[in-house]
Length: 416
Image (cartoon, rainbow, N blue to C red; front, side, top):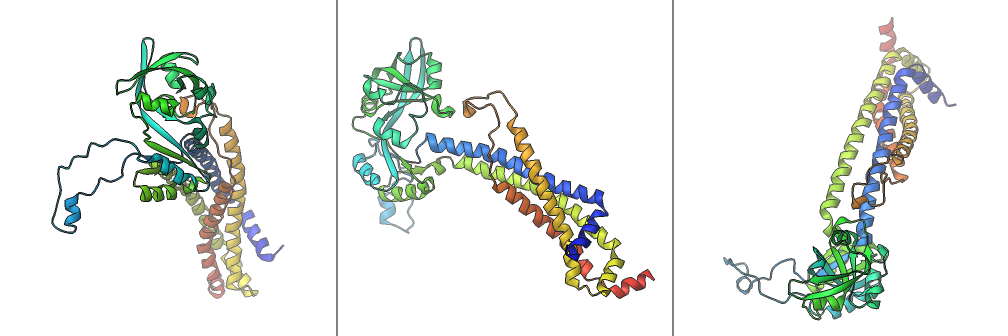
């Protein structure tokens, strides 16, 4: 065993209680970091996966992000001109030349495209009625853009074509109506068109907004019901690489002009909350490790004070200042390493404990799950251990540096 390591172990071994308290402080910080990270990352990953699986990655809408620039503003650009009270033009909503735009997007590698006409309607079944958002889809394209087929608990997506006037509804819609597969409901649109549909499927996505308000029919039937023949008001896209959703959305909006949103933009508020949530988590765990670092600083400072004569003797025997500093840095590093290993065990135990906790199902947002959503990843172990080692080393640096600067002559004279 190297002499510096042997001396460092001897110093820590003679102060077992203080060393144990410091190791436990580091272990608790690392353990809680691992456990809380698994808990938060589990929910965040589940939410993002649900959004990515249920909704398209990019949606082009029949609207514009900014209003048209008025001719007066163009004619007198840069001049003292202000246009007020401009009312929007009464134009027919819908994406113009949707077929050409779909064909242009389909040639992009790794992109699947599906058109949709969406509009409000009232579903009526006997004395019950509920408002829904009707989506007109093409089943062959839809299965490549969304996972609606995977989320169907009853029926099949092909039944929309196999059944005259077929309709697929969310499980919440079916429950409010009291309807089941095979029942016939009446849909009434704001245009005054009423049409009968037969429920051929029920979907359960786990997302409340979809399950409680969505219904799907064939695109041509939706165009008839909403009195918008040959109109499409949304082009949805699914990408092989979800990270390219935002760049693709910006590029398409620049080319075609229509407002195009990626899944990140549509859920920006919630994703922003995740950033705040992570910042709070790191701050709390960082505070725990900071307190543990002060404990390490206290131990090594005390050892330096008590071992002043020993340091003088070591220097008189030929130990350099760097050798003395190395001894006390080793003490801090050993406490940090021991705390990191103990923290890994605490974190693993905390995750297993959280995995056993059961709770009442609070609603469809966590449908089918009665336990915590935990992410079992390896990086929190490395991050927690690295932060613990860094905190311990920084805490040990100041007293180690002071020990290396002690003058052995002054120590011996003071002792005499």
